[in-house]
Length: 194
Image (cartoon, helix red, strand yellow):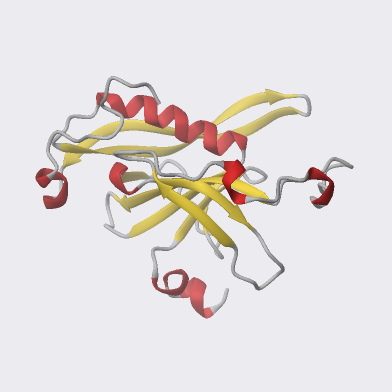
């Protein structure tokens, strides 16, 4: 673990990520797991978009935008690199691999410790779990912030049973001052489906 890992990923909130091989929500650069922990989610801070990884040790290129109150996330077509013949080969076969990886970033605060994190959702199962969470958020009142649990479920694949991330709405916390100022403009509590 390096200096930046120990010190909040270079000044921002530490990153959490789903590790499907281990079936754990892990803090970046650490073995610290957060399975079944409760977090307060700031829906207005959720961003989505794409990340393009570069060589080892290089900062990835990020193209993201907020998804509330207006979806400002970039479309894949707007990023370039659309010629599949120029894409690198996938590590799982001979198929080309899109250099831009879809991502949803959830800003979280640990319910007990108060420490802030950003949970990065990449890959089909993690992004699917985030989309399932968005449907659950419609039940949260305008004056509250959702409390979610980072749970682990299972799914059957052609390779057998695998673990998958599950974000479960378990309660609501009082809204911070900034949310109270925007009373009535609650993400995902609108007539348009996500």
